[in-house]
Image: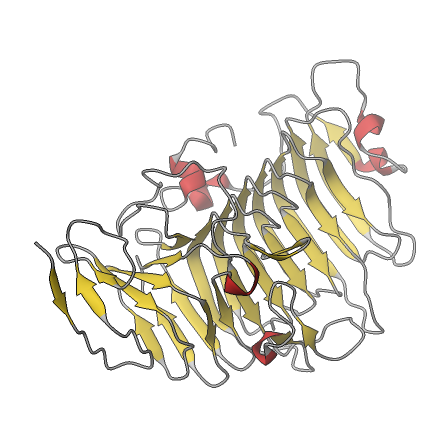
Length: 393
């Protein structure tokens, strides 16, 4: 038997009419009684709001946290995006001068996933979706006021319609603070909003160094895992598994550091590291990374004007045709402590590391690498770990 009721929630959100339905959990506008409450979000967040432990929140549209508002997501919360493409793609956007305080824990991570996912609070692995299924919803987009290298001081982020002014990012505040994002897993995203324009798992546009981002997992996003558009934010302890495009993509002179990263089986490049697009120039640093290349198209894709230092990177499970394509020439970059395990055939290190980059690569046998990521940082809380995917790391 179904019992309908009107639930009035006194928060900064309007949830509208909901129903109590224990027969078909996950239906539109449904609250599930018992151990899980599911609430649909249909309006932008304009006041300080908290999403509480034990609940599932369903994004019914593109939801934006507006300038001046803070969204707090408590440990163990699950956020599910409805299906949609084009202007109907669901996503959570943190606008400039807004904040996201999403602080999960190793015991209770925060999970962003699709409405098709039957996962409940307290679970880590999806009970019904495979970890290579992508494009079911959008993703998480964080926008700030830090400098970017573009044709203007602030521009519109990709993945959001140009008519939406909450999609602007960039400015002059290098220490801008967009909040705390910690122990967060983002899965099955990358909905297409237009030809060749998909949403990344985690998009960081002009995000400043006052923002804390650590312990992040991206699983099966149709576009990039994490893409930086300028900014100065530093992030650490990242695992990216089964992306359709690049695992890590940097643009517009991101000026931060990413440390302790595991990349598993991206669809295109393991790293795509582009140079500045405007007059502002900044260098970023990538260090302590383990890459299981598997079916990736390439290892590291660089431009002549890329501006990056890379240190302590280990590549394994390589295949013919993958490469580190060139050494940048416009700016001085450093590449140190690279190790690689080659496939058991006649290929040599120069088949994979081109343009003289083989000079800084040491060949090692499988399991004997001395550089790379600390896989223990992902134990228990990440799907990549509990699935056994990291057992050889």
